[in-house]
Length: 107
Figure: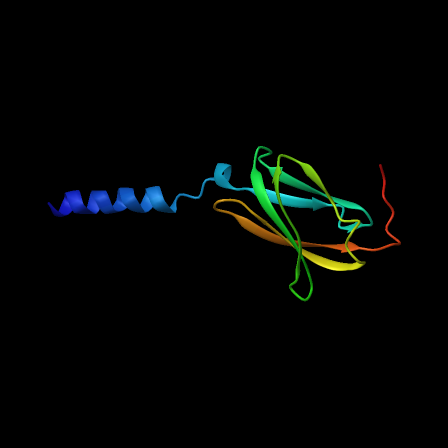
């Protein structure tokens, strides 16, 4: 009986502690210095994510749900540094970008 309990405990440990690289989700923001838009990229690509853009005082400026790789228009935001919270069901990441009138946009 003790061997059975030990075997069950070991199997449960490995099934819950196995870090699988395939489960990792990566979010990116491009460009980090902009004047009119940012692009949210997700890896794997087919992720639906909620994006919240806040100024440094914590005021929520933009909230959107994006599918795949999408541009978010930030032309209405005043110049400054912004915090972006990107989240899905089980993952979240925080990044930042700077919106400035001197930023150069390459198309």
